Length: 396
Image (cartoon, rainbow, N blue to C red; front, side, top):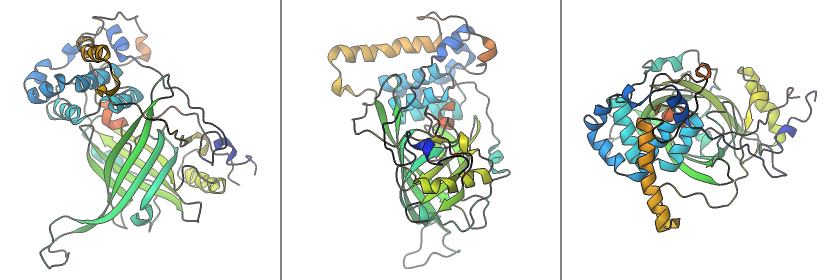
């Protein structure tokens, strides 16, 4: 093999069966308030009255809940930086926060952000899919072992469990059959998605679980699956394309590419599923071949850390189980300072000026809107800062 052992580059990051411990690059801390304050921008760029009027109920519910308000200010601090926003949802995500985001961003535009309404863009020039791939082949548990887009695809310990079933679009009459006159039968695949999010500057992590439903497309469709709905309170649409797979015993894999869209724009990526947390070396050449056939450089693909320690995950925000009274008081009081800083960055903390040529954050005081774009765990969506684990240049 001209490029050397195709599996060698993955030995330390868990794509092939691991033989040593994994080293994961620490996530960078990011404080968007610093950039925003340096530009002299404040909350006045948005309709503050909208929060109290059009979204009065959602704002009252969220802003009187310490954990939800922490989530709002955490997202504001991120200013659109995606890994930062994902960590906010890992710590503070809740139904209250989802409802507040839906109302203030989508329903009433309290936060003034540009909106990209052209959801059709993701349907243009789709990649070639494997014809005849059946959804039932995904039944059961799969592990994401490689990702294409480092922003969306590569969180640690991504285990996806599929349940493929038949659904109908209307009730079936008692004693009757599903027919064109009564209901349209269709297949759906429910996915339970487990993943971990590393805490910056620490070996600790948050354990996360979300669910998603894929609609199975007809055999003559240019896509394999599609899904749409709301995630973290914001609308999205996503197409999945199965562009390669193997059913060889012990070497099973599925190569998925996806395209998605939210009101804040489009995103894309891809990943490789395997039946085990690692991929046998003998299958890597096939994966590399699929990648090249679809214009993806195998050397740029990232390995996902699936070693997954058995340590207990961090508690979510507001969990007072391990807080003493003073810690609890500090927790409840701290969101007041965060809120002040969100409304008027620089009120409490003084920030140095930044180079505006490299920090273009002109449109929103809180860029909360990136949350759905980057948070697609079941599809595009998981991001991490792993070391690259490239496939070899030559597959054989």
